[in-house]
Length: 299
Image 1 (cartoon, rainbow, N blue to C red):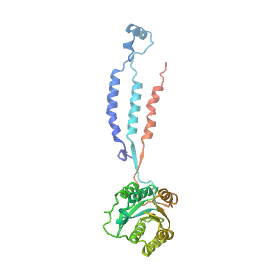
Image 2 (cartoon, rainbow, N blue to C red):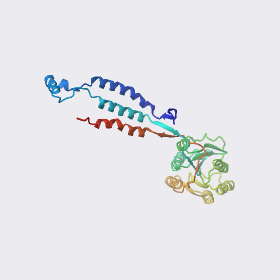
Image 3 (cartoon, one colour):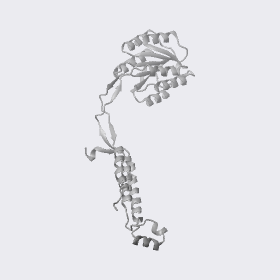
Image 4 (cartoon, rainbow, N blue to C red):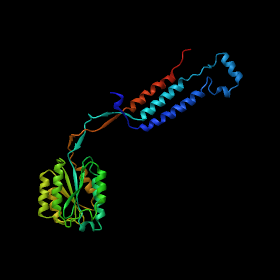
């Protein structure tokens, strides 16, 4: 390891070193054999005590040097000297959750539409370590957010979905479910969840066929209903191994995604940049000059 391998994580702390040097020089120039006693005590008394050998007129700057060294080392430690490591193991979750959102006019014009989006964001907060993504559909289906572990991005995307998101008129949930299966396959998800946000429009034999394909690939299908659950929704959830949730069952959706999460991890095939902060070890080194303050000179 060489000096080139060290990186400072918090380099702005080094700006304190010039301040410390200036303060140390000021203390050095003011320090004398008697410190401030020669100003406070009677000069005749001080000379008499010096003649009797009761006081040492020589300046002892060792405590000042030890203190400045300790503070300087602490500043270097706060700067965060770190060593880069690329041999750290990283893992990715083989489970994932796709939120499939009906953005057709019949859904976005409903007064309960904001409540549905809020429920989606609560669902994102229950993902844990699993990646998530969003598919929006109306007359056709599109990927709004690819599978990602950045849950903040997924939640923000939920807030941006409106009536202008999907230009195609109609409601084709089977296309959205087919796209969900494709996205799960491309992301190498072994045991995923698809949550379909819908008012029930367009559900039929074609969407049931896509639900069966999801189950065959190891993915569950659950539904969030804009209104009351219909028989078609119950049929899709039963076939998909999932459940149907109404807008009043936000906690139920969170618990479903959190408690029934199937965690399967594998070592990722990409390196992770890992920095090992060595500052804590420098703090131990700062104790060495402080020990000099406890050293007593022999009589």
